[in-house]
Amino acid sequence: MDKVIYMDHSATTPVDPRVLEAMLPYFTQSFGNPSSLYTLAQDAAKAVDEARDKVAKALNCRSSEVVFTSGGTESDNTALRGAAFALQHAGNHIITSAIEHHAVLHACEWLEKRGFEVTYLPVDRDGRVDPKDVAQAITGKTILVSIMYVNNEIGAVQPIVEVSRIVKERAQAEGRNIVMHTDAVQAAGWLDLDVKKLGVDMLSLSAHKFYGPKGVGVLYVKRHTPFEAQGLGGSQERNRRAGTENVPGIVGTGVALALAEERRPSAVAHCARLRDRLIEGLLSIPGTRLNGHRTQRLANNVNVSFEGVEAESVLLNLDFAGVCASSGSACSSASLEPSHVLVGIGLAPHIAQGSLRLSLGPENTDEEVDRVLSLLPGIVAKLRAMSPVGEPTR
Amino acid sequence: MPFYSPLVQEHLRNPRNVGEMPGADAIGVDENPICGDVTWLWVKIQGDLIARVTFKTRGCPAAVATSSACTEMVTGMPLATARRLTAANLAQAVGGLPPAKVHCSVLAIGALHKALAAYERARHPGS
Image 1 (cartoon, rainbow over the protein chains, first blue to last red):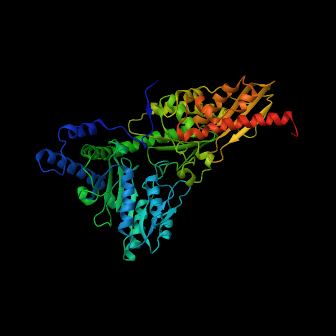
Image 2 (image 1 turned 135 degrees about the vertical axis):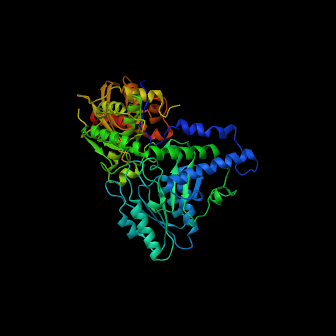
Image 3 (image 1 turned 180 degrees about the horizontal axis):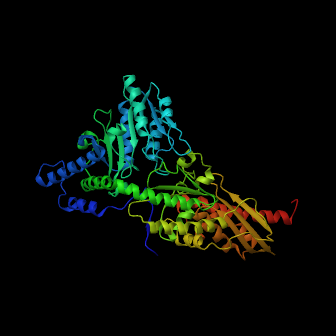
């Protein structure tokens, strides 16, 4: 097989060799528990502090506002449950969108079973939440708003600055607290993570999406945000997340986020150009639909549907040729239901089944784009020749 | 262990007996209304044997592979034997399916049984 072409960076990324190198001493040499008092352990504690400083710099926040978790899912779960329970005396209403990651949606459903009420805002055909809908959905009982920064399937960037402003103005006018959270898992390395500009109280990240290790996440919790810790135990992370710190993982996260911020302008420019080439090439295949906005989308995201073709069969054929991509369809889960995101932007279920996501990274090249564009028309044609259309004849 | 067995992959790479069959004795259509996957199966019968089968499927690799394997398996098979085939037989024929994909094997078997039933109805009208 030819060299593998990796175009699934929204699923995960490889660990950057510089990140791995920074992590290694904390497995076998400076392996101490950061809570211990001896010098060996204090090396680990210092490394965690330095990583926290690096993350704080990328987010433009205080180091004390950075909580390390086990990943994006824990960050999202903790943000929603932590804020909802801390504010349950003030109200029980939560606002989110219909196209959030399941780490947010399933946390919302869990909260609904425990007496909270959730409004799932619709999105337009490009996958964007309308800030006016947020304003209309806020009631006297609203305590939490969680809208993702950018959607993981179709790359739709959400108007977080406007949403935060609406939420905060309303809360201030009524003299109460409404916590604003954003799931920024797909934004790191692509969009500005400055929490002051975004105006959010909480923000979730996942290290393996930006060339860091798997199993580490970040939850930014702004000072004075009502928050009830979810994991119970030791006093780590200023009582916001119990459990011995994943020292190597946290060290890697700090380095990875600093590197991601450093290369962000060049990565965005490079990938947006490759993305536009891919989109243009794919749309020349008849019966192809671009999901999400043509230009108002994350620099690395391409999502298309091929009429009459199921996505997983496209994926497996791409894999035969050494190309790693992803489908927007959730049919590999037992639910059979097509992607809630693609249904959310108005696609019929059978079109949503045909959706292919290619997510780029800075190491992708023009030659790789050429190769993918040369492969896909043949794959789609082969599957369409196999696909029943109209009425059967004999 | 890959998500899909080597046999599923092989059938997707080189699906057998794809296409419409002019002069078929019967056609069976089955579809999954939730995921939208569809299988059409054409059968040619000679005496008590299935002489030839072709298919068209729009679906995931599991649906395509079990359709393809079904056409191979039942070619030359007595009608009575083919009527007793189950989705599990087809899943087995492609080296097993991931648990979440077992439901995809019902399309091909459904289309086969419908085609055979249609053939019987055509042979014995009114029965």
